[in-house]
Image (cartoon, rainbow, N blue to C red; front, side, top):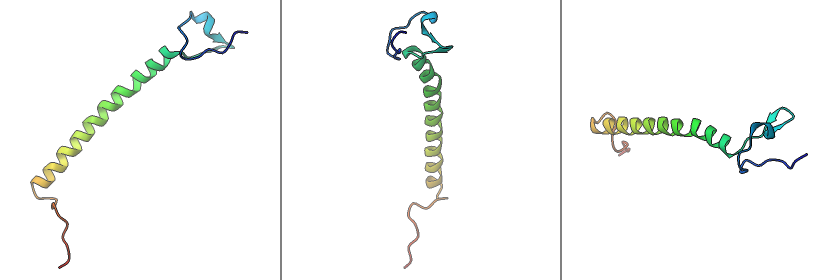
Length: 73
């Protein structure tokens, strides 16, 4: 039996990755998963953050939201 594979090992043909019906993930698998989720999530978060900033700025500009909270006198 060969030594356990690391995700940082160089890619090998698929028949060498099989171990009891399980394909050992490597760096290529990890990068594909990262690229599948990280950029779309970052893009969506950026769009939402910009929309919230614009919305709050418009509230302050139109004086629908006071810049200072009322204080008891």
